[in-house]
Image (cartoon, rainbow, N blue to C red; front, side):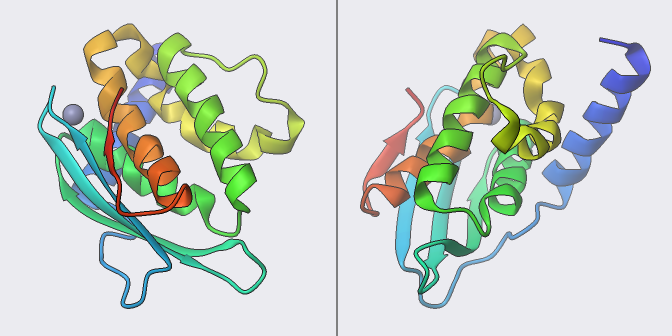
Amino acid sequence: MFDDLRDLYQEVILDHGRKPRNFRRLENPSLQARGDNPMCGDRMQLDLAMGPDGRILDAAFEGKGCAISMASASLMTETVKGKSPEEAKALGACFRDLAMSGTCPDCGEALAEEMERLQVLGGVAEYPSRVKCATLAWHTLNAALEGGQKEASSE
Ligand code: ZN
């Protein structure tokens, strides 16, 4: 990766880490889940509001953790709004590939735009201990979509 691109990615992560988007609770969430990454001490509570069309109308989180975990949750809540649960889960699976390997060769055209936004976190692949920080938000999202209130661990 070029150094200037790496710097840009780091800036985006720090910005989202310091000022996470959608950092709040929803008043009447349709689905909720808690996420916990004991390896690093990252914790979050995710609220989802589902629209009448079955798509994710709003997503918000609160929590405490390292800049990577907060930035990832911030980007995740921004990216999944308007998605169906199936699309959101597919995106999460692609994101896990990205976080583990640094690239996602099989993510396909349909998710290309979203994956480009999430690419800023691809750098964690070089730091295996931080992969769980990056994927925690997506594990928590899956837990919420699969019925809420279950505690997601970052395995
Ligand atoms: Zn962390």
